[in-house]
Amino acid sequence: MSEHTVKSYDEELAHLTNIIARMGGMAEAQLAAALQALSRRDSDLAARVVAGDARIDELEQEIQQFTVRMLALRQPVASDLRHIVAALKISSELERVGDYAANVAKRSMVLNHLPAVKPVTAVIHLAKLVQEILKDVLDAYIERDVEKAVRVWNRDEEVDDMYTGLFRELITYMMEDPRTITACTHLMFMAKNIERIGDHATNVAEILHFLVVGTPLKGNRPKSSELDGE
Amino acid sequence: MSLALSLPETDSRLAKVTARDVNVHYAEKHALKHVDLDIRSNEVTALIGPSGCGKSTFLRCVNRMNDMIENCRVTGLLTLDGDDVYDRKIDVVQLRARVGMVFQKPNPFPKSIYDNVAYGPRIHGMARDQGELDEIVMTSLERAGLLAEVKDRLLEAGTGLSGGQQQRLCIARAIAVAPEVILMDEPCSALDPIATAKVEELIDELRENFTIVIVTHSMQQAARVSQRTAFFHLGELVEVGDTEQIFTNPQHPLTQGYITGRFG
Image 1: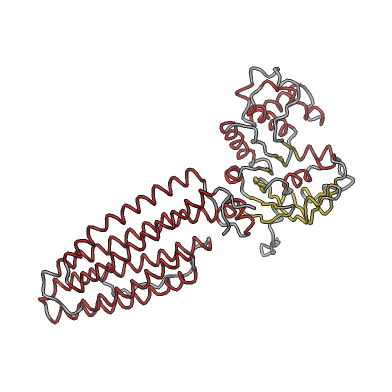
Image 2: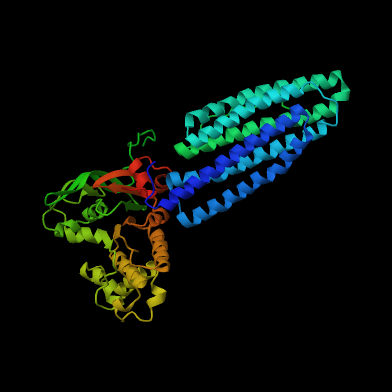
């Protein structure tokens, strides 16, 4: 895309992309740290993740103010309008990702007071997949790569399948040893949170499609199984 | 009658004005190139594009204002309700009664407000007596949203009104002869934002009874008042579509570049 005659307009649009990139980076780091806190039973790290969520919230506020200002002052149209609306929407998605990461960290602190249980590994396994998807969709955003975004969108099914398997595993584990119910219930919520992060990554992929192509991403997103405990 | 009749591919049923391969030359200059465009009835069509893109030239073809320009040559087919506008049998005076025009700068005649509006109906013998003429003048001023402001001074000079009022007087004058199409060439460029808003509101109301084509340099104005937008560049019609689509998802890179301010 060539440049605007008014240079400061380009700078403002670039600024939006930058904040989103920073938010995305933070959300990824928060999720990674929360998982590390879980696997290493590190309550200090978990506490830092919980406290760190405020920074993502601040960036969301910044995006909101900045986009409202741009809408009022620039009266954007076409791709510029889509760029600005997309930034506003993606910032809310990433803010939610941050919330879920913080919740995983919070629950890991509770788990640290309980005896360790085996399915932690499976939760981390699920999270690895979601981390990949989140990273891919953020890269796709920076590169404005619609095809990559569509691939991310299609991978949500993998997350759902893995989540369903994990759900069964946790139930089996709890039935075998009811003393693990508290820990496993927390793990189940963690898994749900992580699965939700995958959904938000999918939403970002849809928004990116709208940003670049100008039309909604068509078709039905793979639905999670009815067995997901909701 | 069968309902299964197939409809034509384009919406030419709704087209009030159609242009097919319309070309305009000013001496050697090829000002308008192979333009195909349907102007739908009871809609506002905005023509946008940078200076010299041919949008005003196109507008002036519709009521043959270009006839007055020396060395101007128009080819191709331009129809109004299916009638060839450039047919030699067409009476240009009658044509211009059917296709009215409002210009960039308000240009009331140096006559009273009343006579400005009564001018066209008198020429075309539209009123049998004074009562009918009064009726036409009042209705036209009313529809132009001006009556309340001028009803006590109809005999004062039209040139004594404010710029915005003068422009609405010109619109009243244009609609007094009951045209079918109203052409507007940057009707708000000399007006302040409040007068502009009044004219835009008026355009929106007039759409019910008239087909309107507006040339504007203000993209926001095109977005606000029109249902269809046509983008011209270097004499060519680059893209035409629903205004909403043009301003949210233009298909041609030139349209995109122009409306987002990335041009040239």
